[in-house]
Length: 496
Image (cartoon, rainbow, N blue to C red; front, side):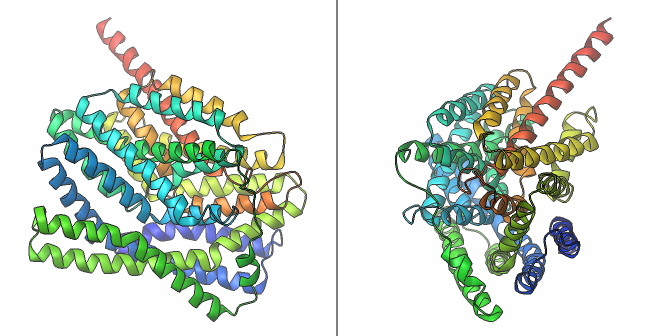
């Protein structure tokens, strides 16, 4: 638990301190109501997240291992694929970042594009892509060909999708993988790989399944954008946000917590019910396992409710207000530099990045250092945030002007980087765009877009997570290409 608390503090505390420094520096002063809610929200996030992660370790991770094992042990491809789809769908629908992100989108669109409809579409794409990723492992399809096809489809569909859906669609790449999806899908990928590969290939084959699922979610939203291209999905006034300031702290807190309890219940219950059915019919776990998983599920629920209540109570609105006030000052350098700093800090504070660095060092036998990867990701994310905010401030700079070249380079590098780096790269996009991207940096960009002449919060306010996810993928592929060149040069020197 102490380790979880440390990870949480490193993730949330730096952003919290930066906001307070900006507030007291008078660059963007929050009113007393919002400042109080922001501090309460930040404290709740710091309390809730380690409780949630501890619960995930006790329950979700164990359920993922057992359910994945049951699928793999069936030795039937159709069962593995159907099970992969169902698990992918359920874990994505329960992922906290998905709800934080989709709620921000739903608030800016027509009522028929509700929060839960968006989650269901995203989860369907994620589940289908997860099944496709497992089929790749079973059929021994090379990762470079598989991901080149996926990113090629993303490139083509982007050309036909309504502009208001492009940024939103690619933002889902960074919002779909987290503490719930990761243990389930990794356990499933490793299990399937162990049945179809030599042991030396299992680690390599486990990389990429998260990125494949995320790419599927992007595809699903792009298809939705094509179908709704001629429909009016323009932003609508956010009445809930306006009225929240008039409520007392107690009333707004109670309202927020009750809505969060309902949201978390709807998100987690399908996973728990599915596990209960599979456990009764196939797994038949020991009583000790049942007791541990049950306690862990309760802890997961409580932690997630506390964490998300903190996000919705004050964190989102405060970050939106910071973006608003910096935009209203009319000095382009301020929102750009503050955004770049937020991006830089978020990478150094993201625990998953440290895990990725260790994996890369091990796979390359130290040829590519963890610090090199860390700084590559940090600079890449800072650049991604800068590009995204620059796109908001300059109306003529459209998202496709930057996105299509990035996708083109990614597709080309899929044929130049080693296979294992392709899997690592597509997972790195989700790793770099952690919870703080959806909970703080995205609403910060929304605040800037809402108060910049010529910008549209729906078209320009989204797309920030897109580049936070895509730039690290590009960076990792470039590192993989460099590693390949180094390895080839070393071989030539040895033969000489």
